Length: 379
Image (cartoon, rainbow, N blue to C red; front, side):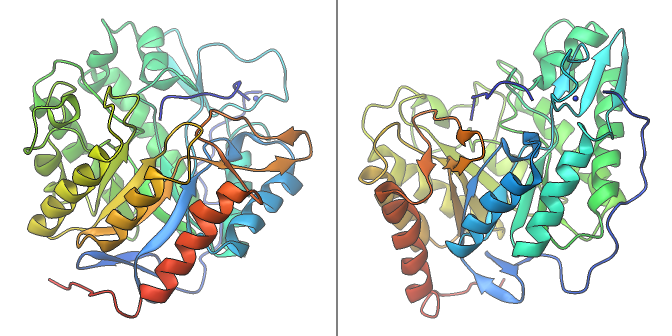
């Protein structure tokens, strides 16, 4: 999703040592077309809270994580990136990486990756499983263009092929993955949020995803890896999201050996689609590809502005019924914290509201009631 809260910061030396001791229990995995979490094979619900690692109050993190756990949500996707080109003047502002003058420095301080540390530790306590992407396609929280600004690339598309930018990106990946490689709170490492390469041949993103997924697995072979794309580029329609205009080929990328599961996003209004029911076929078409390739897919982002309890629920039902879809994460989770309500981008569903009841409470109950009857596909 392209969206930002105000960026939430001093530089500290890079430390690659893992701050988390090896935990008992098992890492999440895949079994055929399903996820396995804490020994349970099935379909899992979750949400996105990109903003959680940028909070500076531990109590706020724990409150939000506790609300997710008590609601029965199991998967949470948070931003594992926050890139800047100048050090923020306010030392309380959180950032993870500084890019300037052809060099990058990772902030491992109290306003840097230590904030992500706390999110991981809180997730461990609550039994929540995290998806952590390493970079943003969009300029929110820096994104690929923060690298381009510092390293002098021609435009964002050069990020995928520039050796210096990819070197800095992989250094950051190694720092993050090494910190949490022993944590069972990690569901998956994600190469990026909605990676696009406008007007590029699909080989560009495919080559990048192939090389980067292998790199992640070389550091941490015990956790899942996914790309984090929107699911664009597939057969079935002439509509814009089905085209390869943004440089993605969904089936080609899903077939990459070190990619463990696929992702799809759904925003009809943002994509110029006027009929929300269009989304049901979008989900089904991806499920068919996932089944044919033999990997599960996650309905990773979806939402409708200011209307959460009509067509959005149909999308949930379609995903739950589709062989090949192993879970869904609505965009996005909202809560009331010490400073008030978290940001409302009109997709936000706030904990404790009537919308929460229909999007979360009812959906979790439906998953629970149908889980024993769901047909597990083991290939």
